[in-house]
Image (cartoon, helix red, strand yellow):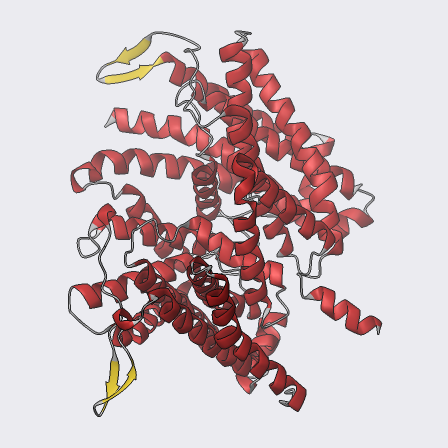
Amino acid sequence: MEQIVANGLYLGAQYALIALGLTLIFALMNVLNFAHGQMYVLGGFVTYEVYGLLRWPFVVALIASALTLAVLGALIERFLFRTVIRRSEREESTMLLAAGIAYFLDAAILLLFGEKQRGVRKIVTGVFSWDNLILPWDRIVVAGLAALFIVAFILMMQFTKPGRAMRALAQDRTAAQLMGVPVEFYSLLGFALGAMLAGLAGGLLVTITGVNSGIGGPISIKAFMMVMIGGAGVVGGAIAGGFILGMLESVGLSVLHAYGDITYLAIFAALLVFLAIRPNGLMGKPWG
Amino acid sequence: MTPRASLPRLAAAAAFVLVLLVAIPLAITASHRTDLYYTLSSVALLSIASAGVWLTFYIGRINIGQGAYALVGGYVSAILVTTYGLSFWLSLPLAGLFCALVSAVIGLPILRLRGVYFAMVTLVLTEVARLSALALGITNGAKGITNIPPPGPISLFGLTLVPSFDSFAERNLAFYILSVVMMIVCFAALYRLVNSRVGQLFAAMRQNEELASSMGVNVPALRVLAYAISSFFGGVGGAIFAAIAQSIYPSSFTVNDSVNFMLNCFLGGLGYVFGPMLGTLVLYFGWDLLFQTGEYQLLIYSGVMILLMLLLPNGLLSLRLRGRSAS
């Protein structure tokens, strides 16, 4: 039992980090970033190159992942989303663009890094065991780092000037603009930050589960689910959604094991019922 | 105002039907490119499913779940034909109706969601369909259902209306005719629906559900109706697809297909009934043409898609509109 909870917490910390980036981009731009999973994969591969192949320290690799994705996110916002949002008659058009970017990154990642499953050496060796709880140390470190990034992100959103500006933007774009917030700059910054979080999560998880070029899509779907559970565009909701999904997965995999591979089916079904009762998730505002 | 079916418009529609049913088969026979029958049938069927997605766009919902209904439709038809020995022709409407019924039950709660929320739930729905097909006994798990017999004859009072598909020398020609006829019927129905009173109510709902509701429009019933029709199209398309491929697997329609259905609508243009047809044709053939580029296929395809979005964010058919308003 403790094992299941510990696994759930570990998974949840990772998932929350992924969901945070997605929900940030959604809150600021009203864009559902289909390419989020692909950004995660790219972050994983950057860490694989720097830490696994070049054998530089893990921290450097993590920073490289974060920076690469931040720059990529900024470029995507500046040259793609901003243009399409300005020219299109319907805001749904951004979804096509996001899907196009997801395909494009999928293809680019496949060409650059190949289709093989890639892993790196452990960042910390050894196993932590206490009572009947067994956890490898590297998982604890990775979960701790993820929690650290989440806390840093929340602190930044709450107490710094850019954080306040982005919250204002999420609340009401026009009002924020009238108050003198440079909305274009903060949209760019927010998108870069969201992409960066995806890259960080990828860089962290590559040390444990490895990475391959095909997992972008499934990761995106998981991220969507977490955001739906918690409520789109709400920071607290994304974190709650991440931990809930992590816990459900951990519990489901051990409890439903006997019935075959139906954990995800059960989670999906439960999600549909939950959304029928609470359409905006746990903490979402009505109609996002 | 309902546009009157003017003479030039009718003539254009008739010419289009003639080209599809006579000129293209003749051209294919002359050039011996019989593989095109299968390609064009696929385009026709995918555009039927896309037409369903388009209808949900028309009421202001982003539907990324059409793959689920295409899969369900394919399985219902396949199971009815193989396990219960029903005629394909009877299984086709039943598959569509089953999808419509399922979507009405699911739609009642989830259609309360809007925007991105609805989009994400429908995306999850596609995964639910795939995982259910893997887990259930009747769908035969990952092995899928294979060796589905081709459609038999239809006879009425001893008169054979449609010969058995086995009797065709070129079986894919029969499937081509079937797919194209179904596509024409579906798009004609869609056109009629959109230009009817109900269609105007749909448009009103897209613009403002609260306002429409305050005018006495029964919004919950109408949006379930639109969603059920949409899923009916998906089910019918999937059922014929299973018949052509003579097999159906859990992976026959995945999240990628659901996304593609949505992209077809976007590319053709959300403001035009025939947008999904054009979008499907362009995307399908674009993808096929890029096959020679090998490993760069997806890269170029998605790159062109992004460029199209930058240059024509309102769809291909907006070109025609722009030309018309300029002249």
